[in-house]
Image 1 (cartoon, rainbow, N blue to C red):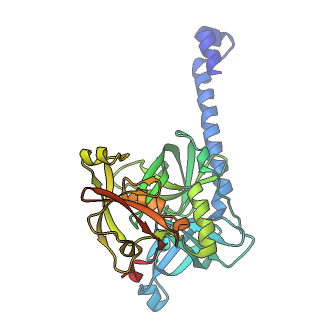
Image 2: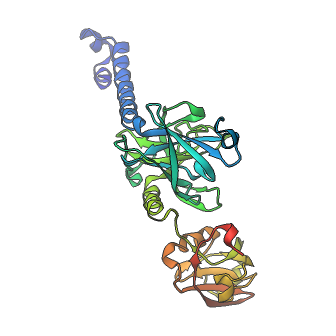
Image 3: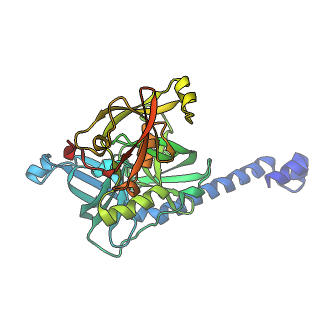
Length: 349
């Protein structure tokens, strides 16, 4: 209609008994209806599977008297009919008790199945069946500018729906454990405290992200873990209760290398990873790595930052010989290290 008006002009439109304002209004109304219908459709599909996650921690008032306000709250969503729920790690981490409130108002105790602070994802479960559930979609199909809808429980307001667009793809976000999460989705769909763990969905109702973080001083800067990462993590958490990663036992920091050193050793970058400490009885200690060594390669993978090191030390390298190329003073040489399975900080010496 709007194109027709532009073609025939105001006088032509009036000759058909149609005023220009009516044409524009009809077109904008149709667009608004299409947008509204997309949001409504996605909301109606996914909202019944969205839950409120109430967390009580050890020593809280509830733990002492069994009656208390929640210590923490967040969101999650049911992804299997038999009660498996995906949420954020920071929502349920160190929880002594978890209570899930379904969309119909029913409250059920939940147990932690697995927790991965490095990706800020966790799986919990309620012991019930025949639940409304949603499945993870493919976040690789997302495009910048695409409509997305966030559903969660900000400040305890259950099943709140906000809409926006994909602002950017391939962002990196630092998790609470310090590890970098790659390929994070940036959106301007409004998120608030309590939205954490809720789904980010497309207009077709496909869950393509798990809402995880907001930059508080800013507006419209919100982030979600992509479903491609969540699929991998969920499978491992259900199977093992955790994500297995390689550990060699060093503390390190990023460093810039002198250009002469880069040219002399034909390095691919002017950056490397400086070892600032080596843990006792660790794989690195046994391999002969020392404080002051600069790691530039792990097998055939260039190491420019500590995040590169984390990416390469996957569970596939646990108990397998790995060649570490280091620069010590001015010499470049290799050492053989056998990564172990990553241990909790309390278990490390």
